[in-house]
Length: 290
Image (tube, rainbow, N blue to C red):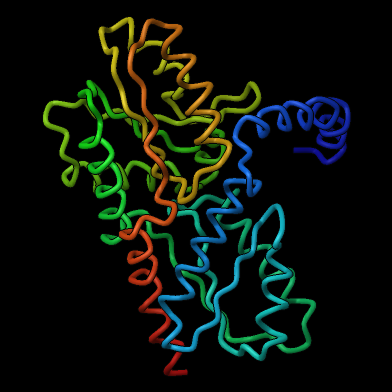
């Protein structure tokens, strides 16, 4: 977008209203320890660190927007003498706005260093067997623990503008591939599987079908009991806890739905912590040989 136009939209439309709305939404999910995303990310980092402790590998958390930041994590590692560095994005499905944005933040900060470490990045793992298996374990366990049987399982991925896909972003295909790989591992037993996209912002067309519209449509089709999972999020956050758990439930029940349950993200599920290690292992082995 033209920079002057974006400057006007940002300062005249977005900033005067969005922060207040976001603060109100965050207040509905804030825990005793603060942000669920930060708390869970720290727990994931600690769990991963413990799994790699015997190999004498340092693990630090860096957040793209927030603290601890990516620059602070890089500085901590480099100041400790790290010479071989692996970046593990917590986005399973590659998108320019997420995964590539993380690359940008890492590369931009390392350019300020006189000495740059040997660097490698974990590839997108949207179809990695360990990640898909961890998703299946989490979803199957949750459904098995319900006192009622869902009629449908909605897999809700974060959406992006359709124009991004037209410019070559592979995100949509990655999401579809995750669903394709996941389906055979799910114990659905007559439960319909529905693939959707959430978090649309603005008026431009985004990836469809929109999760919110599916929530409103299902009860009119006789689907009154559903469970929802968000495979694109590895940690629970505003989009899963509030957009799905609060707003989504309200949309579904207002349209005539009855039972609604959101499956927690992978978070610190043992299968996911094991999957993280398996996903990183090839690069860890390669780095040791350098």
